Length: 148
Length: 90
Image (cartoon, rainbow over all chains, first blue to last red):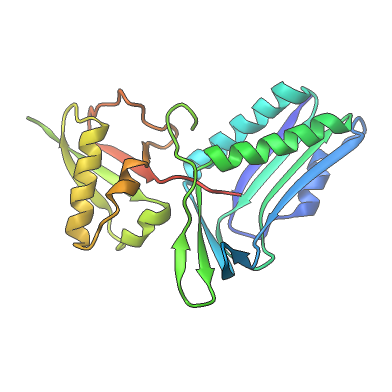
C-alpha cells in the first residue's frame, strides 16, 4: 500500500527521517532529492535565503502532488516531502524529497515529478540575502485556480 | 449596498508592505477579483505612498485557506484572504 508523509517545518529537515519513512522490505530503490542553499545566484554572492510559505495550502498541495506521483508511476511507492520555512544559511537544507519503490525507474520519475510540481504549485517564496547587505524576493511561477 | 470586511494576509514580496497590522478592505456584495485587486492596490498605496508594484499584484492570486480563487469568484460576505505572488519554492 502506498504511503505519504508531507510537511512544512521551521526546524532543520531530517534526511534520515525521510529515508526511514520510505524504507520497506518490498522496496529495492530509494531515491532522494535534497535542495540546499547555494552561495551565489545570477552573479551575486548569497549569504542566506529566507523561505516564506502559506502554510494552510502547502500541506494540501504537497499531498496532491504525492498522490499524483503515486498514481502516475507506482501505486505501491512511498513518498516523503518536507520543506523548510524560515531563514537558512549557505548549505542549509530547504527541501527533502524521498521516494521508495520496488524498482528504480518509478522512484527516479516520481522524485523528479515531485520537485518540479512543487516549484510550480506550492505557495512558497524565497528571499535571498546578499553580501552587499541587499535582499530580494525572487520571481517565479504564477498560481492560478487551475494549477494550485 | 452592504459593505463587507475583507482581511488580506501578505506573503512573499508583499511582506515588504507588512507593518504588523492586518490589511483590511471594505468591498460590496458581489465584488469580483478585479475589484478586490483594485482595492488592494489602493490600500497598499495608502499604507506606503511609494508603492509601485501594481504589476506584481496583477500576476498574483488570491486564496482562502485551501483554495485559489477562480475567475468567477464574487464576494458574498466578510472574508479572510491571502495574496499569493508567483511562487519559487524548492
